[in-house]
Image 1 (cartoon, one colour):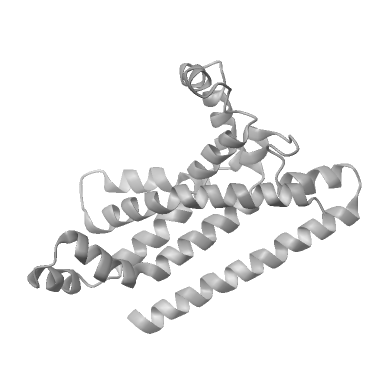
Image 2: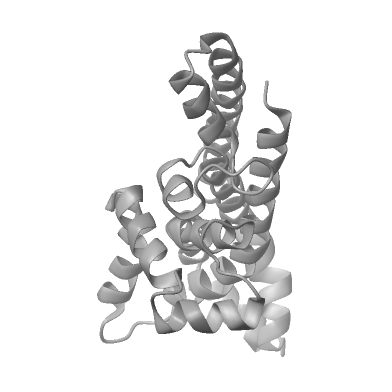
Length: 222
């Protein structure tokens, strides 16, 4: 069992969730409550990672974040190193790749809140901030939990984007998924099997938790 790779994957998943949670809250709420020209295009753009092969997104990130582009050179001067083949680059790639997993569950949760409840809060002289904290946030927490769980689990098992952007540098970019691939390439099926079993169990727990949250939401609001 490659514990270093597992801990790195957990760290990457945690960083991705911490960054995407506020982004998911703001973007999901905005999409749920606002109707504007081009909304479908915005939602389609945010959902592209759901259908785009991970290696394609990883390729474009590899090119755009490398020192062959203006953006890549700017980031290299600012950070002191290039983002490709670094942990920071993996975080950026994971954030972009997990946008739909963070935004869509939260958006659906906000859309499920009856408009009358928000209007009632406004009629009771509650400020928009109080409506958000006391009405919207408590009612949308199942969607928020789903977003957190799905984003964390999806990042933990991601392979294509991680391999393209980060490669396989031990302690820096070698995640558990990359470690499994390396063990298979080395014909070390025992180590690959043990690491795969860990991810399998974690995935099953994640799916069960997501379904449990969904069932709770249906019982409470359905």
